[in-house]
Image (tube, rainbow, N blue to C red; front, side, top):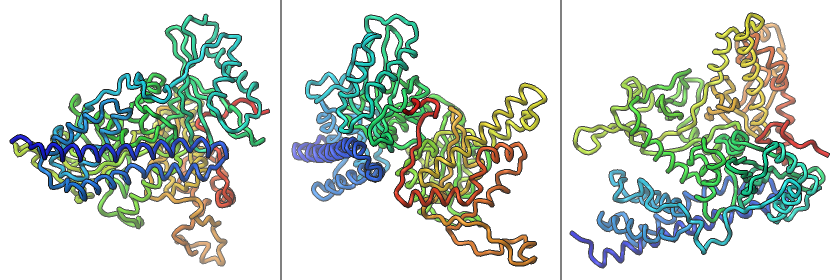
Length: 604
């Protein structure tokens, strides 16, 4: 049966309403992102944090608005499937010459899956793969400004050209000494180029939009010389003089990967053609998946779409099975993984043994807090999915039994197509980058002889590993404290090591704001009976924290204790925590830099 002309008109109106919904969303997204420039110029750090949180919610609000409109005006959920096929075709037509087609396709999927039953989540009704290419969208004459600008200095004119490059961003805040900063950047670029001859194509390319996050602003670009490309980023900060300074010159893929880390908050950057930004950034960081670049740019839904497509591609080209993730099992989360895939899947259990006193909604609230908060490079980003289908034959039987035992409400096994092919449906899951748990990282060093480094070179290397892990652990906690986060459960197993050697926290079910905690000293015993008691004899409130009691749980190993007490003994002192709490409560926003201290230009 062919759709009638009336059906086709209805389908076009539905498609147009969905496109209007997306265009409204992206206009609001760009407007909020562009305002970050003014907030940076006037040092409105609390406003920047608030906007960061609110922008994350924009997408879901617009999807609800749009799906609500479609139900009210078109009874969209009651329409025949041939009408929905026409809706998709009309929508594809509306994507021609669109500047954000990949985002608009994802929006279509979000609205459609809000209205239709899960059995219709297939190629005919949603965009399982892209229908419109994002290649060469920039060649459109309708684009208001190019994605990046190019500059052509010589060795001699490099400082002046860099000064012009920076002025072209039109920051409405005076630099303390822009000629000096430009000369520093030029000197760093010259060192990076070395003695190489400047080729005919030598140029500096910089993205037209500034990248804003926390208290920083970043110029992002690359040097091109012959066949070589050198990615760079220039952090611009407020100086104590209340003027601007270039704080450092970051070079190379590793520095950029740290800047765009999955453990940091999303950037605010005004982009007319986001796919062109992603393509430029991918040329600088070829090891970084496109989904993580979209996430870093604040386009988390597009990141989720690309991640899922990559996941399906990996499933098709692998044969290993999902299993219970190795390591110490958690009381709140059931964790599984696919050995060949660098992520872990976390499902909230249905019940929790004492002393855990929480609920599914409270745990989801903690993960949302992390999503909306400044993660300062110390908390892993999570992708949240609902109703995820997996092939049953890819699941280890032991894993299925584990889910049936601890999270039966989250599991459904169905006959997918009525042909005996079964599918595992997980109702709600968080997905995170896989890291080496810190307790395993340290145990490997202990096993390699790190407790006695004087024995051989391998033992010395293992001792260095212990030292590095413990120092980074303390640094991670201090960065979290600066961001107003108390981790709650500070055991080593709740932290992981990234490929860059950074320690990152990933167990969120007990986190609290520092400002909500009550930091106390353990009271002195009033008598011998209290002193000898093996039980806690003093009152403890739900938000009370006793820093001096961390030591018995963390520092049982002498090698660990020695390093910890040398570098981070202050974490056992209530005054450290209370001092930060007081400063945060007074409105102070700490600087947490996404680069090492030694990379900073010396202040003058």
